[in-house]
Structure formats: structure tokens, C-alpha cells
Length: 225
Image (cartoon, rainbow, N blue to C red; front, side, top):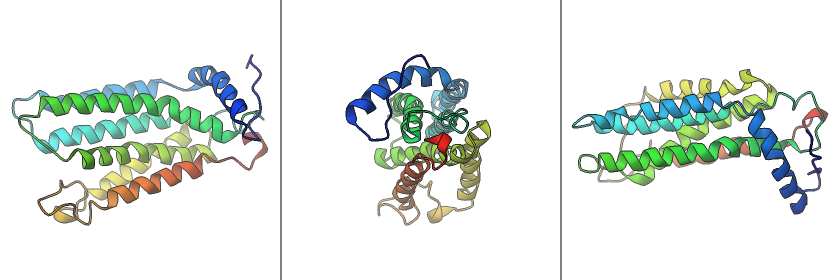
């Protein structure tokens, strides 16, 4: 790096802001963007169901969930820091990891929000759904591969570490499909409100946030600090 990065060990606000400003351009070049680009394309293609004359509600919602999952899986590939385990840097690991996550998560959220608004307007005359639950489900679908990739990147700072995200996503998705009727977490709420299975979504979101927080914490190895 050509710019001198101040240390973040003491967490001074001015030093942290300066470090962030100097580090972002380097991270933009270091982050592999092709997985995220592929995820954006897949997220857009997943909304093709809205183009039919009378789209099915499950197809439309599945497209939104798939879009969130794809964007999250693509974002996870930004988390492995190939130099983090071999080079001693003046920037704390938690700063580097959260900046890496923010670089892809912010545009991922923006893309999904635009897709959601567009889809909702396109099918407003045919299909309605509880916005809060669908957004919560999408948040979990997107955050799951990111949190899992963060755990993988903590122990293997290569693309292999990021693959933990899509792998965990696939396993849990397949597992959730074995639950049907009222036991399915994908079922939309009825007149009586959320079912017990749907109460899992806010719990899952909190657990994933905790997982991400723990995975991005400071490393005990000298090279990761």
C-alpha cells in the first residue's frame, strides 16, 4: 500500500475514520467482484415469473428469496483476505472484515430493494403478501451465506473459506423443504397470524448477526492483527 495506514489498536475515532478512508480504495481493488456480478444477474433472472400474465404467488416469492440468497452468497466471496494470514498489517482484522462486508452488502441490499419494489408493483393487482415477513425472510436468506462465509474465512483465507457460505445455505434450504403444511417456515401467515415455524425467522436473524459478529472479531494470530 502506498498510503500509510494508522493503527486501530486503540480504537481512536479519528484514526479509525482515517484508516477507513485510506483502506477502502485498496479493498475495492482486492475484493473479487465477479461472484457478486454473477449473483446480481441471477437475482434479476429469478424475477422472470412476474412477466407471465397471472404469476403464481409462490413463484414470485421464491424469486425474491432466491435473489436474496444469491446476493448473499456472492457477497460472501469478498470476505476471505488472502494476505491476512501471512502478512502483519497495521489495521485490525475486524476493521478489514467489516469494511469488506460493507463493500458488497450495501450494494446487495440496494439491488434487492429495487427488485422487491419492482416486483411488488408489477404484481400488486394479483398478489399481496405481508411485507414485514417477506423482508425478514430475505434478510435471513441473504445473511446466512455471509455469516457462514465469514466463519470459513476466519479459518481459511481463500476462496475455499467463502464456499462455506453457499454450502451451508444449500444444506439448510434442502432441510427446510422437508417441513410441510403448518410446519413449513416458508408458509405465508394466515388469519390467525404467524405459526410456530414462522417464529423461527427473527430468531435465525439474531443468531446469524451474532455469528457474523463473532467471525469478524480480532484474530489471535499475529498475522491477523
